[in-house]
Every structure is written in structure tokens, then in C-alpha cells.
Image (cartoon, rainbow, N blue to C red; front, side, top):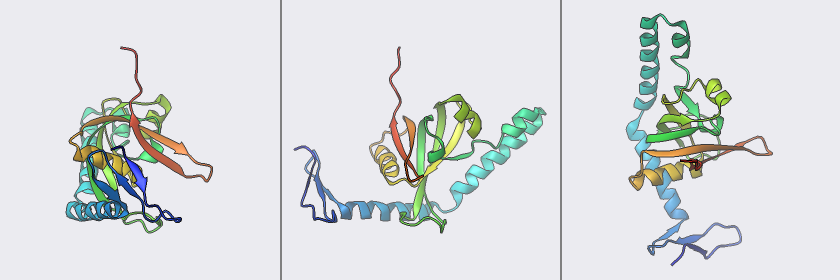
Length: 189
């Protein structure tokens, strides 16, 4: 049976989706997902931020040993990048962890965001330079964009990580940025 919506109220508050395997997914399923992600984030705690900081610090020390001033200046660049700033970036997502959000200026969020360990596969040269990224280098991408979070969590649940994809950042008229995870464009062989 194809996926379809049923039983929608005028406000859209109650929508059910029947999946191909006969499962019924509704708003309660989405709330349960967010509750599980917040609990997982509490379990992980502050370790993720400390890990990112430690990698950047060790990168600076390694660059210092080379006495290459360009390498020293690049060493802490690209450590953590917001997906909204990474439009057109192609990455291999290796892993994902939810992190409790402590930002008080964000309203309407789910109380967490995801932090993904990635390898940079490609992107526009000016964006790579602006973000301090190198092809083949590591980057931690972060986002709280709900559909992006759901997609990466679904890939993780399906055992499909690592996954090679493209960040798509779409500016809106209101000045916000919608962030999506798409497939890497097809290319000539």
C-alpha cells in the first residue's frame, strides 16, 4: 500500500501516514522521535564539544611542529560548520550525535541539534576557502533543521552511514535558510 495521509483536521493537527510495510506513523511518532533524540543527547553530554576542541588544538600543535605558518593558520578552520553556511558542500557523513541545545535565542526548536562527523568530498572553491575546508579533510557539520535531522537519523537507523550526500542551503525571502540533505549529483564516468 503506498504511503498516504488520512484523517487530517482543518488545522492539520492529526495526520496519519500509512507506510509501504503497513505501519502507521502520526504526530505522536514524531514527538517520540524528538524525545528519544533529547535523551540520547543527554547521555552523550559535553563529550562531543570537547572532542571537536581537542582535535582543533592537536591540529594547531601538529602544524606548529612543521613551522609552516599557513598550516598553523588553517589548523583550526573548518572544525565546526553550520549546515546553513555550507550550501553545495559534498560530504561523507560518518556518524551523527544529538547535542542538547543551550541557545536561548532559538524558539520553536526541539531542544537539540545534531553534530555529524564528515569527510569533505567537494564543493565550490569560494565556499571551501571561506569555511577553511580542504577536500579529504574532516569537518563537523551541525544543524537543528528538523527534516535534515530526521533524514540523517533515518539513514543511521537503516545502517546507511557512512552516507555520501550534498548539503543544499536555500535562502528564503524572509531571510532564513532552509537546509536539506540531497544526493550527490550524477557525473560522467
